[in-house]
Length: 302
Image (cartoon, rainbow, N blue to C red; front, side):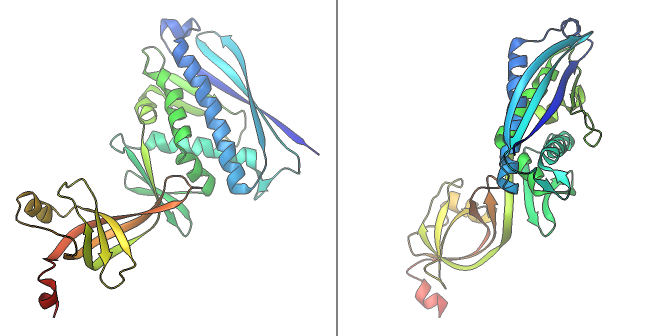
């Protein structure tokens, strides 16, 4: 049996400006906002289906309307699945999606404007993100929504009308007591309009020891390829940030060739660009302790 859920979401822009009080807003803002909301809910349900192995189909319809001194419309969310309604600890997937969207928006509102990259780390309890020095825990769906670039871009689009003089608030009302209204004000706009990247760290650790130089670069922004002395089958592509080493390189005090040996210290982290994507490993050498040219390394290592 197919179960169908009909959820209404009220989108309400308000303010003291003459245009908004006359139920007017730039057409480009309205179209981008409508498309943004459509993207947010569609992508959020896609993430939920991947995480909970559910098969919820989503259809979003628009219903416009006016009231004095504002511009608003309804989004009609129709979700359906052919089997029994999925639930997570007695909370439906649909309710979890709405709560997670709200949670992600509230986190973005709280982030300092200097935070242009969202760093998320896996923990034993789930996922953590740093908000002004405080570690905040996320569950899997909240993490998936926050790291979805389409959703973050869409959140920026729905907040953009608040950059217009006279448009002061955006209210998102899901009409559910357990999911309070999302109130976005002009003071929040910069935090939400800002296009941030993200880094999802799955695992991290240290790198140290002796490595042969396979390929090198005198450009400090380029990466080096190194091969482990103890395990020649293990090669790493690294960024070198050691300032003293880079200065010696730029001043031509260091000359390199293939098979030179470096003693290094650094860090590595395993990263996912999306929660459901593949992980890649990034290496950074923070200190070059020694450089042994190829012609010297035999006697120097004895």
